[in-house]
Image 1 (cartoon, rainbow, N blue to C red):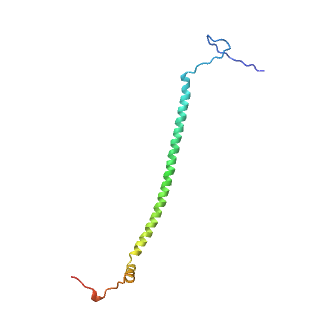
Image 2 (image 1 turned 30 degrees about the vertical axis):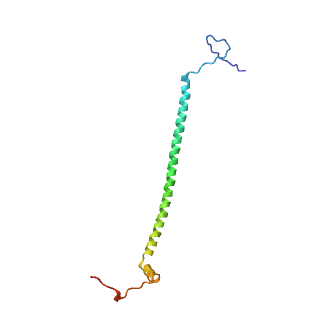
Length: 115
């Protein structure tokens, strides 16, 4: 059988067999404070990294939306230019003048030249 050897510490003024509780020194707690500080700093660095990645992803989505909006606006601009050219064509204007407004082409005797 194995023997259990216990080493009792001797403290002056303390009875033998009495449990002795020693006070922790503040210097001993510095490791705990340092560990907590390092953990908090690590969490803050991770949050900063995650925030920056999130901002990059959001910027990418905004660029994508802006590009699709630009493409649709360019298509609409092309359609509007074609409508503009169709509406200002001389054949269309002449058709409206003769058909809807009842205007006719001027005869040669109706033309007056001014010098």
